[in-house]
Image (tube, rainbow, N blue to C red; front, side, top):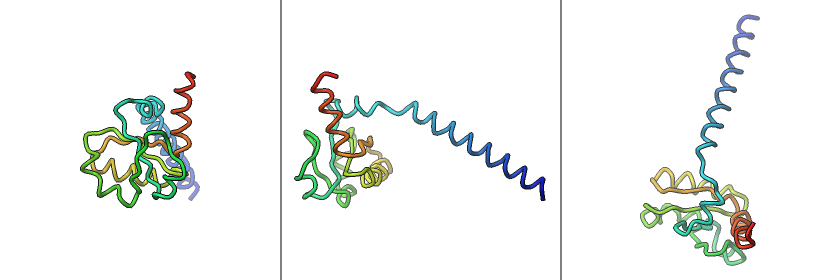
Length: 125
């Protein structure tokens, strides 16, 4: 019994360390979201409902609510898009849908985050 517990602990530790290493490597390949947001060829997509979008969003963003993302896949293929929402949850869901359908998508997380990136560029920082 003790051998199984020790083996289990060692196996779990190795698995955890391997997982961390994989995540770290993937992070290194991730493009800088600031560069992507400020690219001339990127489409900024606010995936919140229309009323939230109208209340405030990032400069130049278009509104495609999460419920409509699947219906807009064809118009987004071949383009670079950044998706965002209020807290990042809907943006994560949109990312999953877009990536499954071959769209080059980036996670801007929240509209305030994307707006802050834009404001930072304008102020020259």
